[in-house]
Image 1 (spheres, rainbow, N blue to C red):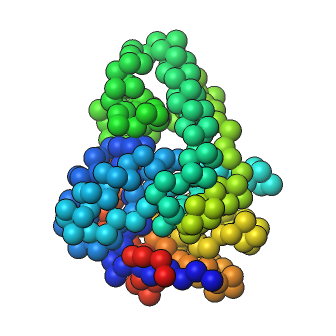
Image 2: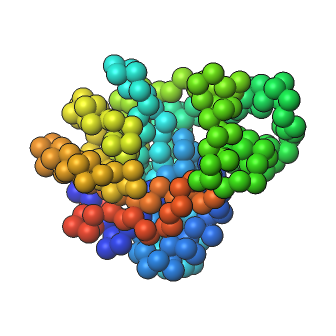
Length: 278
C-alpha cells in the first residue's frame, strides 16, 4: 500500500496561466513564498505542460513543487460535473495526457464557437487576440474571453451579470463539452503512479460518487476549500475515515480570474503532511 508524506504547509490547489489562472507560475510562487508555504501543487485544468517551469521556479524560491492536475470529468450516473485532482504522478504522465488531450481539443473548439456566437450577438471580439492573450495555455477558456469583454473584476456584479447572460441558461454561448468519465480520470492518474483525489465535493455535490470510485483507485478527498462549510468538512472527514482516504486542501487560486483568495490562505490539513512518496 502506498503512503503519502505531505509538507508542513502545503497549498495543493492553485492554477496558473497554463490553464484558467491569470498569473504566471513565478508570480504564484512568489506569493506562496511570502505566505510561508513549504510546498505547492499547480493543478491546472487537464494539462501538465507547465511542470518543468513550476519545478524550476519553485526550486529557486526554496519551495517543493508537487506534480498536479485537475481533470474535468463527469458523473454520468447523477448527470453532474466532478473534478478529479491528481498528485505525485510521473511527470511524463502518458495516461493522463491521453485522457486530457481530447478534452483540451474539445474545450478550445467550444471556446472558439462561443467567441463566434458572442460576435454574432453584437459584441466586439477578436479571436486571434484572445488566443494570444491565453498563452502559454494553448487552450482558450471562458475567462480569456471575458477578459476581452470587460475590465470588471471576476467578483464584481458587472462581471457576474455579463458572464451569466452569455454563458449560462439561454445565453448565446451557453453549453459545455463532453467530459471524461470520473472513473477513467482516476484510473489515468493511478496508472501514472499518482494519487487521485475528488476535488471540492461540497462545491459540486460529489460525495455520493466517492465510494464508487474506490475500485478505480481513488485515494483521497479534498477537505479544505473556500466553498466548503463545516458540514462539508465533517462529511469529508467521515468518508476519509470510512474508506481510508487522504484528505487534502488548497486555495483554488486563479488570480484575477477567480475568487479573492491568495496562495496559502487555505492549505492541506496539518496532520497529513506530501513532499515525496514512500
